[in-house]
Length: 349
Picture 1 (cartoon, rainbow, N blue to C red):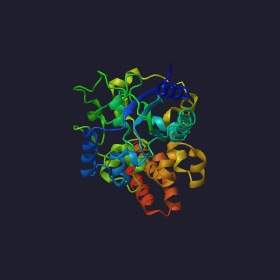
Picture 2: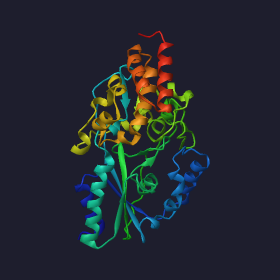
Picture 3: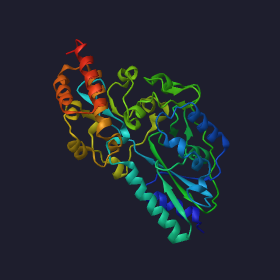
Picture 4: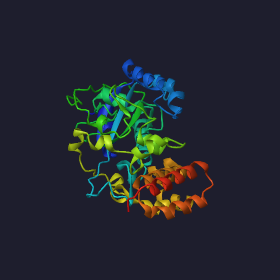
């Protein structure tokens, strides 16, 4: 005889969630202690919303009254790529997750269906979250056994490595929680720590966002510190280095879901010359509906200037000078000037 838990998991899998685990709503204090430490060390950089909604992270019933359990969900997004040279100075590199339709839109639609399923079929209140809400998904996912939190702070699953999107469904019904019986761990491995160009991954399982390339190129709304610009390399949006070197990701499985398999940017490499010639209208036309919109035109062009400077390719001087003539934004002008001077100082090409 099926139960609400059984039917809920079957429904979630039918909607495309590969990983489905139940967690108790009561989160062990260890996770909140780690989170408070991260905040107290100002490792959240300018992401002030992380601090403002801490009470909701502590008391999850503020998000949904009488929450008793969580359905923690994982969606695989790994795509095998054709070989390409990440040193090619004509191109900029985009994080693997961002080359398709915005995962928030895809997963949020699934979560709305799960909410309706709970309420219409079982008269159970439910509320879904995918990044946008103050839910410590990685903590709940680890507690339930979906994976474990690695040294790079990514949630690493046994089946898909860390190439997964996490989301959660808060439920007012008390369900039997799953337990973490995984034996996989990082052990003495520190490949992610050693590979991080900016040394943003700390030995105590914390990420310093002030140095993280993903933060600097996505969430950061201000200038990129001069001392970190060269270390960004050719990453124009996000960074996958710590995941690419992780041994657990050797067992990654090709995504089968069409929504995540259909790509908008081939092989994560985008022509830097084309980007430098974008205006706000063409930026919107090119990237609307993708995660790249998170950086906005201003942030993306700032990143493009940095990557152009790091390329040391004189081919970009014309586009940079043209951009400098057009833009009135002081921050963008400063980054363009930096890139021009960086290229002129190089003898490459």
